[in-house]
Length: 563
Image (cartoon, rainbow, N blue to C red; front, side, top):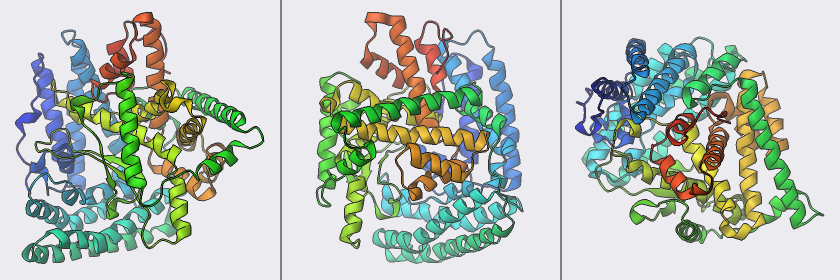
């Protein structure tokens, strides 16, 4: 399918004409290279349009990105830009630098098998009810029709020798994708398509299943010659933090900040545990409090009631504006998306139809044993679900999503975003809500929050040490077991994630950046500081790199460091 024409809702209208043209050209280039992003943004003219990942198209993308970056560099020194325009140029420039590093320096299209998996994601065509189901299934079929071509491009692009950690993780992803295509997707389409459309779907799906199966065999054949090294290297990692998050610090400075937060949280957790019961360890108390959980039948209604309590506390204490008076909907995670225990699913910022946001909570499976059900419910204990619900819904991701939708100045801000801002905001909210007195200072909830903070601290530290200081996966696993109260299997899973999910340090980095910004603003404003105004203003910019927001909120943003 050809690339759709540029949608008028994407037109940027800055006072500076050169910036307006650059913003439009950037968005057009991004959507031309990654049309599936259009669907996620709510631009449904891109439904069914699969990306071209041939070496020729990737080379064109690099050339286009360099030209856009040259234009952004020129605008960076344009003294006529106002503060908001300077913010957007800086965001755009960082976005281009990050993308060029990803493709040119890190060569991810040549070295990381996992990167192609995102182009095979098609379940959203069924999940979201944004247009008649027959049209959505037709788009799904067109997208899936391109799977063999996409996989052929992946095989042509990938190096003869690949990092073992990335190769093994890729195999996990593609085996899961094969199971989904072979089983769950077939049942999903069968349940919504008419006989004629299902008959069209079947051979297309069969070809996709065949292509993915052959790709798995091809990747398995590379295991014998896989390279042991996966690390990006110190300098590349520092540049990645700078380009993605706007933080220009040395690796040693970054690690020191993470280790300091880890120690603070560890010491606080053990101190709270001693207050609860000095005869028991923090580990013992965490295990004990996991017995306080919902039943299989009450998990969803309990979570819905919990959200209402959290929401009301926010309103009563004037913590942040909740736009439009909306209430988050809690439902069971669809079977094909049960790769996580709880998460938000929101429509794109340009969605024209009224499409609901959902807080998915994964229930126990009916065919599980009683022991398995109890283990899952203990994992979703009431204190943990309280913390997760703050992160995912109020005032975390869901509230941030609603604020982002209020941005009506420039479409560019709805297209770009910082991982550390998005995840850092939600992680910051977990701590901030307890600081504001939610749950009356319940020490058990504070322990649950701190345990999650320790997991994020460990991700931060091991990502930086694995990629910049030679830490092995085994050493990272032991680090997580020691500092995040994890058993070996989940600790190893977290450690392996850090080998390929380079930005998963963003939860802690973003939280630390926001906390430092808040402290600096409080020092600058004194008695005039208002927490709600700070939160509303912070989210009014979308999700830019936090150091860029410092320049918007502080009179002297350079008076002290970002961390």
